Amino acid sequence: MIEHLEQTDVLVIGGGLAAMYAAVHAAKTSRKVLMISKKKVGLSGSSLVSMSVHRYAPQTEALKEEYAGSFKASGRGINDPRLMERLVQQGAGQVAALKEFGLPLQFKTRDYEGKAYPYLACCAPKFGRNLTYPMRQYIESRTNIDLLEGFMAVELVTDQDQVKGVVAEKGNALYFIQAKAVVLATGGAGYVFENTSNTCDLTGDGYAMAIRAGLELQDMEFIQFYPYRAYSPAQFDIFPDIFAHGACFLNEKGERFMAGYPKKEQENRDVLARCMFSQKEVILELSGCDPDYLEKECPNIYEAFNKYRDRRFLVKPVAHFMMGGIPLRLDCSTNLKGLYCCGEVTGGMHGANRMAGSALTEIAVFGPVAGVHAAEFAARQCKGEAGAFDVDPLAPELGQDDVSGIRQALRKTMWTCVSLVRTGQAMNDARKEIDALEKQLMQIKPMDLRPWFECRNMLTTAKCILGSAILRRESRGAHFREDFPAEDPEWTGNILATDWIARFIKAKVQ
Image (cartoon, rainbow, N blue to C red; front, side, top):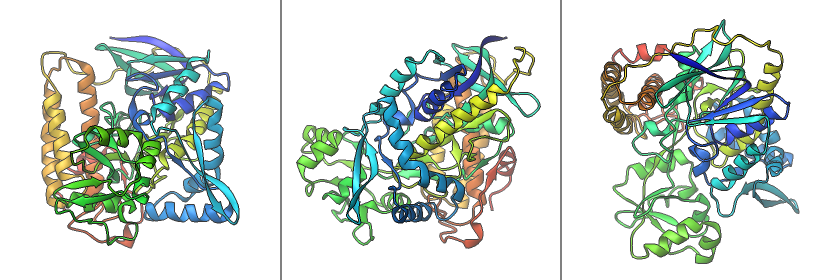
């Protein structure tokens, strides 16, 4: 039985910065706003563990053109030009506007024709929590924003091509939350892979809910594998700018394997990650780095190296960011009336590979857009009757089965067969394994609903990634196929994934 829990004007699903920006701007219109999050708002997801860096185009036309050129080159020419133009034109202003929320951003400048232009904003130290904590405090001060924490959105509820709310789970109970408009800001799906910088709550929930609601996803084959992640003897992210201050990567032979590349360790992330993937071991070498610089700009690295002074720091690429998702529009709307989206759950902005520092700038621009347009849509709706819609999601009978084995098998398969280097044969092996895991999941009686729902979403998202990767028979950006190693100009379009992906990968991979 599903209990009717709440009714609101705007329902925002997610607990990171994209969700929070959408919520506060929706609330400015005097609409009633409700946020639901699997964990605590502002204390979970990729925003919390980000490095707080916002890169954007300085406010001069010549530098905007330069930024746009770099952005398009990083995306290998398949970025949506309208989205890119919006980011280029509004990025600087929207990042500066974040001061309203008390975020402790420090702005760095670049000299051009005798004048200094801001081009980057970050916190000191560069910890995402320095952004998410103040945003949570700001939200708590708003009387028309309520929080439902510990609730997992399970299914979008629709009626005649319009969203009417969601079914959510908490404590093995299901609840219907009715809303006039919904903003989907659930983040990415890095946890589908065995090695990731993402937190464990990023299980592809938004992608899977969108697919089940009949929406398309685009560019799901493009996953950025972050090359700047130390894993031994401590885990931490590496700020890429340190490679302009004397740091470098060495392989197990002591060779600087990126020495022959124009940008060396600051090469495009897809190129660097694949070079690292081909090494037996990658070591972060800091002997050429000024300790004062490290202490000021990278305190996490400085503290780790002081603690483990006699140890080698090993680095490996990890699944980091999904370039694909629900096609992003300028007004953040979708093909489902009343449903808006922002953040990593969307696709189209970054093309085949995201440029460093652009993710937080993107949500500073489009988070407010999603919130405002959702609130405007809600204002045009009449009050509906609760329970008037089909709100019966697929849910298993509870028992004593554990889904963790299925989840770990999926994550290992995706890392082995569908990560940095892909082949048709390996993906065919993955297809068979994922089919078997899905059948296994549908037959078990789990101890708890939450892990079962998450595992189902991971399987759905994995099939979308796999099916799209199979279809793109070339190498472009973060998608590299060893059996099709060249970039093909005939593949400049976007691959769309809907429920046909599940049927497609049941056939033999070509």
